[in-house]
Length: 112
Length: 112
Image (cartoon, rainbow over all chains, first blue to last red):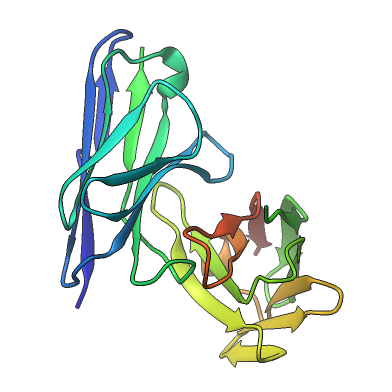
């Protein structure tokens, strides 16, 4: 069966520090991968998606970047965090474009 | 592009009563409509979905209806229980799109 992992589960970082969040998927090949951010009490904002290794589409211009160094690994990064980067970051995968997505457990990021 | 609107934003029902959440979409090409349940501090979980070739789908206490002409779909939860308390998201996509579009979410509270 397929599983999706995210780490860390929680993170507290100072403003201006770098960020690296990791997402890995097991049990499937060539998944579509997605990064979402969820502000407290709010909906899901799509940040990036990838349909293959090295292929990244950005939805919202911002302080973040994404990379896909391996087929089942998706990384969200920032060189310098802003207070507004605080939120709940969710990784998701799907077998096909436009199909059902399966979410990871999320990373709660607090920028102080 | 696709736009999904979800109502209400909050809903409180007595335990045992029914709850209904409604969504509308804008893109007539959308053909896949999933519903997700998100419990506090966790990633969203797919609870039921429907494709455009059917008008209704049921899974125990949960049902989803789709009206393609009016471009709206609804989630129905019968005999609500305390564990139904969560945030629910609707979404829409079509098979040629790389992503699915989420509604803004409904916070459902079940009163004991």
